[in-house]
Every structure is written in C-alpha cells, then in structure tokens.
Amino acid sequence: EENPEETSSFIDRLLENNALEVFTRTINRFDEKNQEEATAVHNTLGIFESLCDNRQNVPLLLCTQTKLVSFLIKRLTIKVFDQNKLYCSEIISILSQSGTECQKVIGEVSIKGYNGIDVLLQVTHRYKKRDPGSSEEFEMVENVFDSICSCLLYEPNKKLFMDADGIELMLMMVKERKFACQRALKVLSYSLLNNKTMCNRFVGSLGLKTLFPAFQKSEKWAKKKKGDDSEKLEEEHIISCINSIIWNGDEIQVKRVLSKFCENNFEKIDRLLTMRKEYSERVEAHKAERKEALETLDEEFEDDEDEESKKIREYSALLDAGLFTLQQVDLILSRVITYADEAKKFVLAALDENNIPIEDVKSVLKDLEESMAEENENENENE
Image 1 (cartoon, rainbow, N blue to C red):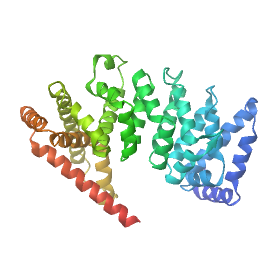
Image 2 (image 1 turned 90 degrees about the horizontal axis):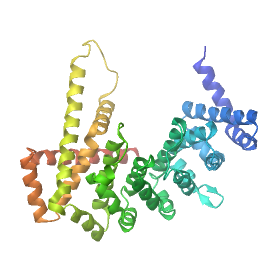
Image 3 (image 1 turned 120 degrees about the horizontal axis):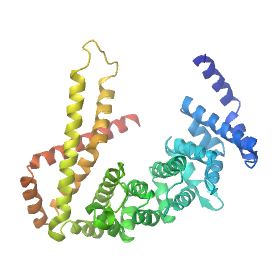
Image 4 (image 1 turned 90 degrees about the vertical axis):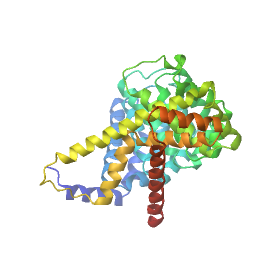
C-alpha cells in the first residue's frame, strides 16, 4: 500500500536531483518509430503528469527550467494521431492552466521560427473543415483549444494570436459550422476580453457578419447536428464576444455593434430578452435546488468549510448555472438603452410586456458591480 510520506520524500529527492531536466533530455532522445521507445515516451509523460498532480510548483519548473514545452508543442505538429500526441496535449493543457509564467513560456517558445501560439493555431487549422476521427482525437483537439484559451489570459499572448491571424482563423471555423465552431467561439471570447485592439481587429475583420447570424440563429446557421449542449455553449460565447466589443472597442466600432440592435424592428433586442428570461429561470432553478438540498441535509451534518470559501464556491456555481450569461445580457441591454431613445423605449416596453421589472436588471448589475469590487479588493490585499 502506498505511503504518502514515502511518496512525498521520493518526489523531493527527484526534484533535488534535477530529475525534471534529466527526464526531458531523455524523452527528446527516444525514437518513436520504435514501439518500445514510443512506450517509453508515454511512460515519461505519465511521470510528468504525476509530478504535476503532486507538486504545485512542478508545472512552473517544467516550463522555466526544462525544454519540455518545446518537445510537447513540436510533437503536436506531427500530423498522425496517436496516444502520445493525446498525452502531449494533456500536459500542455495542464501547463497552460498553471499561471502567467507558464503561459508566457508556451506563447513564446520557438518551433522552426514560429511561436507557440502560432503552432497551436496551426494544429487547430487541420480541423477547420473536418471533425476528429475518434473520441480520443476529439479530446486531443479540445485540449489544444483549451490551451490557447488559457494562454490568452496572459495579455502579451493576444498580440501573438493577432499577428498569427488567429481571429480570422477562428471566424473561418465558425463559418464552417463543424466540430471546431464552438471551440473557436470560446477562443474568440477569451481573445476579446478586456482588449480594445482585439475588439477593433475583430470588427475590422468583418466578424460581426459571422457573429450576429449566429446570435439570431438564422436558418443557415441553424443547420447543424443536434443532441448535445454545444448550441448553448455557443450562445454563451457569442454573448461574451458582443459584450466585450461594446464595452472595450473604439467608439466607431461600438456604434456599429449597437446599431445592429436597432435593425429590423429591434429583433436582436427581442432575442436578448428571450435569452434573459431563459437564463434568469435557470439561475432561479439553481437557487431553488440549492435551498432544497440545504433543507434536506442531516441536522447533525457539520460543514468544515469557512464562510468565505463557501460564499465563493456558491457564487461560482451560480455563474456556471447561468448567472454569468445573465450578467452579460443585462450589460448589453444597459448599453443599448443609452445608445438611442428609440432603443430605450423599445427595451422598456418589451421588459414590461414580458413582466420583467427594470429593477431586476438593475439588481443583477448591482450584484455584478459589488462582486467585481470585492474581487479587486481581495487582489489588492494579496499583492
């Protein structure tokens, strides 16, 4: 039976003796055309994954003290899919979620003259017009898209993404309506977040012509396979993109977006209100389920979690249940109202017609403001 103390001591000795660097040099020497050596690569990747799981500082050490990132990204460029390619995508995904230093290294690593963001985009490009051939290949591509999203949280990587025509590539994927569509929308939502330059580039690249038909669920757009939750995820990413542009873009670009909501008898505002009703109901349903669950708990049950942690966890669950998108919708509504008197009149009348008090919208925005203020305060305290 495994002894945690012995395992911890063993890992300490590995790290003290530069095992990460040794393993990385070794993995680069293997010839995967030889089955035994391909198996050795897979096993070595397993060691890296295990070490990452057991030590929080290992991802940073792997990125800053070894050349593992270079090996992983280079390995992803091999066109043939196999288990080692899948494993490499999993490790890159782990590293990309391990902080800004790791995201920086992944973005800036050089592979045959291309940076890491460029290479990851090249990997996704192969799936612009085709779907993965298996569930495992599906997982590999998903990992690559998720890695790009995580790397875009490091602001300088957004310039690398833009210089590699990442926005244009993602828009092409969205237009194709294949497997990559929803993942591309997710990448776009991350790329536009709090970045004026990216928002302006998106509008300048005619992104609105792709985004709004998707938002309106036009007949052409709706021709797709059903039976999963991808449509709902697409919807949430689209709303996030629209919200980013109207709050971060240049005045001219913002007006182009807001004017869309005044077209065709305000049909896009109708769409917003339909979404608002749906996501409000989802949030209220989650609250009701949570209340019922708490009422049915054994009275003797004691929760060791402190109040602050519980508050954060429950708020996070609310966001996942639909509050995040509800906030985005109400932010867009508040911006549309200030754009034109006609839009304001229509929104207020439509809210009244749908039995949605304007106070509900104000309440959501007030809660969002307070949450952001609290988050900023906590960040300042931790600096």
